[in-house]
Image (tube, rainbow, N blue to C red; front, side, top):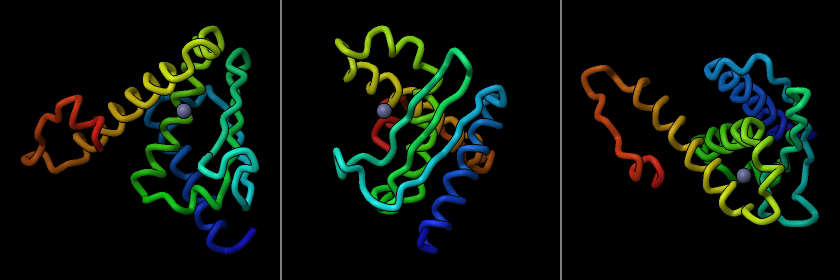
Length: 139
Ligand SMILES: [Zn+2]
């Protein structure tokens, strides 16, 4: 794997471990795999998550050519988004065929709310301002 992808791979693994720790998801095993190029089906696809929620396991396949286009914040949100998919997967498997856009909406809202919460608590204490839900969605 080319060097800049090695750095990105380490960053993805570190972010995934940090989120799992912060969210107390040590019981969830996530196996990340990395492909150097783009997805053959859709060059916009950053990664694909395949969850086996009944075993508390998930596999996330990263397309490094796509992932390398993300800003740090977008990468954080993408890692978080995929982790949230692994949590909501038992529900998604029931409704995905008819409501896949709604599933993405819910996962995106939850991910952004978690990210906004982290940013709120990481801000210096005197500068913390409550953020509206809509503000968090626009980030
Ligand atoms: Zn998604």
